[in-house]
Amino acid sequence: MKTDSHSHSIFSPDGHIPISEMAKRAIEANGSYLAVTDHCDRDVLQEGNNAPDGWGQLELAAYFEEYKKVKHEISQKENKDFYLAFGIEAGYDEAASKDYVEIIKQYPFDVVINSVHFVEGYDVYFPMIFDKYPKDRAYTLYLEKVLKSLDVEYRYDIVGHIGYCTRNASYPDPVMHYGEFEELLEKILKKIIEKGKTLEVNTHHALCPNREILEKYYAFGGRKISFGSDAHRGDVYKDYDETVALLKGIGFKGFTYFIKGQENFAPFN
Figure (tube, rainbow, N blue to C red):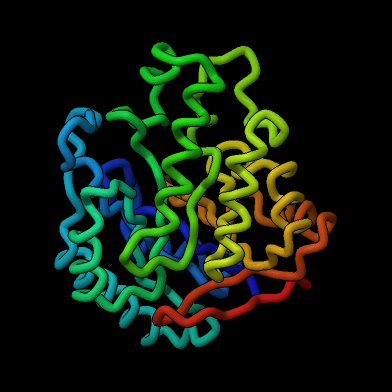
């Protein structure tokens, strides 16, 4: 069973592909499960957070209606072995938590990804924070916020892309080495396990979190992992086979995925 629990359609400000086309590509790739998890970025609305120009908010009602339409079309084509899941990626900010509580009550999400994007007002995908702080400080601030995000009051299923801050970091060595941030990473990984949450393995850029962090998660007893292409241009299941091979080498047995908020398990072949 081939699963992808993180992808974005044109309902995300940085998405480029309609939901219908994403589903078509997933089916053509022999996928069994694809979650559309468009950006629900209430973090952007909080005071002091500087969003990219033109960054809009997810139109939830329209998003849900389009999802239902595409799901119905799929059912009419007898694609019974494929499940299109409805989800969001919730951009964490403490001040946005109550918004997410209400949103998640209002819509029947199969899956909710909880992700940290903003640190001290900067989206750490962009280079501004790296110009302001050295690597140890910038990454520490990011990891401290990830740790705090694990205790939110709203429901979430997956912890998104730990190491997001490394994607475009301008340091000579941008890798988040476990030994450099051991205390925080250990707390994060153990809390994910303690809370019964699922750690995402994200392949949008380089593997995120990296192998070293994944090995530590496994060593601590973590077994729940999800696959996320984080596709924005329809490249669902990106690097899927290579990622499965790497995870098998660590000891993982399969991916966790969610339907109607319920945890399921897809063993590796």
